[in-house]
Length: 502
Image (tube, rainbow, N blue to C red; front, side, top):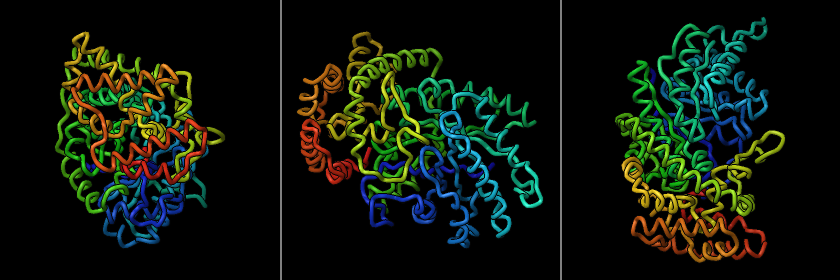
């Protein structure tokens, strides 16, 4: 069995401060290969996700890594001890030519590694975002096989060393995450029929930010809990090892994983085998603490065991998810316009495609378009309205009234702690003013109030940094209300204080 990493560094641009190795906050595409190397050599991470989805890509990454750090990779074999994993563009939402370029990079890497005497193939596994069916997984592998089998005297491809690509399905919607075991089951059957063998293992990847963006905090967490329980049952029934990945980020709405919360995170998601380490985790905390936290994740995650959820409880959790989603979606549709406006002011951290346009694509809830999860989260925090609260207070009150909160409290034991953490960045004066402008904002204020009542706490800043954050969000609200342009400096200041852009 191959070495399964417990930490996967990603290029998500959610950091507030300058990376420890750079004199500016912005990380250009031509520096990401260097970041990749430092993630391995400095921070001790085992895997780096090379992202082709929604951003520009340095396609010479392997040449740069091997050319600049040959002896490091002679000792730390890429593809054996350290891993570089491409997240592919999904052809159903992005142009297919990028997929072909990614495939050629993987095949070329195998040839190069062999020529220079390094472990081959260095790249052998890819992530397919927005996976919703077994067929699209098979389609990607079929396309790769066809390209790998092309023959020409001046184009020898891999000389047979890499004919098949291993696939990591990334499930990004609440309903897809819940039924992901069924998708995997169908995939294994189709894989056997098409390629004549079953994979030795699978790494199902559950998103954490996008399901929260589309359905709210609680549905995202509960869907993943259900999936992890189903994965454990599936593993036993189908006699195949599963090593789940989670797309964790720093703020509670997007996963709550920071160098200070590793123990809580591991308790929240037992059964996860690989956690994403996004930019805020790496650059908005002291480097020594980051290294220690990565070591702790590498040590702890392989030993956590998923909770078993009985079918009757899964039914109750699905009903709970539906309740939260209903409250969440109607409110988000009503506040989408100011979220989009504020998100456009955020300082850029990486070179990404436009939100929509020639190469990009957008996210949405109901009839409205939204920014990506980082921008969405940052916009709401900058107003003093953390998205963790949207729908949560009203849905909790609804469950309590109908005596249906027990199963939620059993499987999301960290909810109170997550809300307390987010609640330190609530600006109630801003919310009261916003509530005067629309019913949707008054619902967000109601969510905060009802969550306070449910948990018998008061959400307010405690530390000096949190109090300063509240002052700055009051300033942001005044600028926003007056229609004045918000400065990068002001928005960076709030991000630094909460140790994440969004």
